[in-house]
Image 1 (cartoon, rainbow, N blue to C red):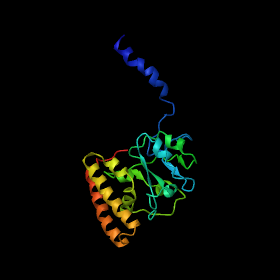
Image 2: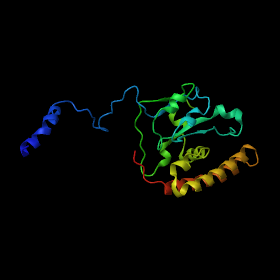
Image 3: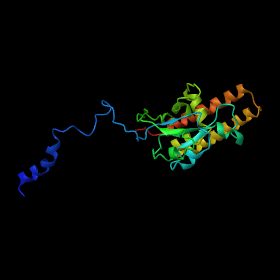
Image 4: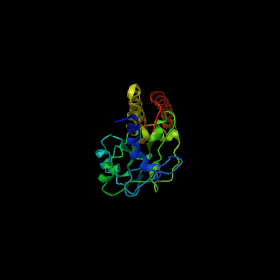
Length: 216
């Protein structure tokens, strides 16, 4: 085959698409085309959720854990129905097993595909139930309060990993011990806030030191 034929042969195929509309879109300048079956950011129906734990048990990447409202004792089995799922989207595979396993249909996918954070904000990829539910108790969660909610879970330690993981797990144990003392009325609320604020600051420092820049 001559050099000219070698050059023109592939153009027979590519040339067909020169005047056709492209299949892709210029995101983010153009919105992506989203179908009904799209697996985007989850949406939680707060009232339908019964805290059964099925979504976490079926998650292959262990990206789901649970939080309780302040003052609700997680050690009491009767309070399990009051817990709500928290999701780490930094490790979520969007496989859909959690949605399929939910017995009440409380957890569903949405068309929302916009998920990004800047720098090493690993915490920003972990969403509390308040952040993915439209009918949750009306709360604006500050960063410090979000970390204290997340210390009820293993998600921060898993998200950071590396050398900082064991340190965060130890701080998590300390935080839970203080929280249980508060629930058992062994310490005052002021003492609880003072001691847990210190732990929260140390956790936040470890998160910022231990995570690599996130690109998603």
